[in-house]
View 1 (spheres, rainbow, N blue to C red):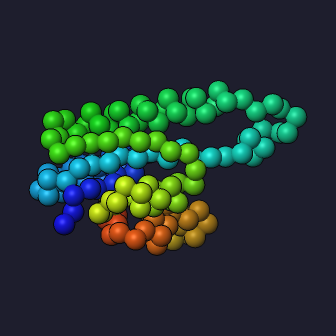
View 2: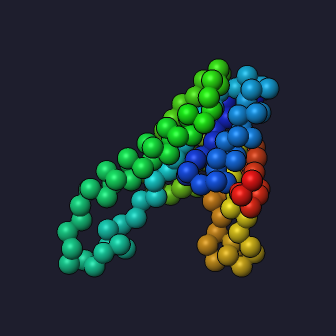
Amino acid sequence: MISKILVPIDGSACSLKALRQAKQLAEKLHARLDLLTVIPEISATEQVPSAYVYSSSGDKTMIKIAEEVLEKAKRSLGDFEYGVTTTYLFGNVAKEIVSFSDNQKSDLIVIGSRGLGAFSRTLLGSVSQKVTNLSKVSVMVVKSDCND
């Protein structure tokens, strides 16, 4: 039985489309929705020359953006009555999604896909593909050009 659905949200049209699909499914199943945003951890030396001092103000900005993304997603659910949680984490996006799913005992992950072409997917990898490969639970990938 599906009672907890994890929906990774990054604010993109693709992730919001996945959220709409997850909401429809959750309403039919009377399932809770767990919304998750992962802030990628990037070392300061990757971002600026080592002569600069790292500041945590960048983290504060990213947290504020993550909170806004989650709040907007939660508001878009309207009067969803089966429970919604929102969480943000730092780390490797795909690994944190799977780890969160394991810890929360999610029954399903619903994730958007940007529809990268084969060449881009080979170079960049795909978060949805990595989550599908790493996850112990079923993953529903909402594919689209995300313009609808």
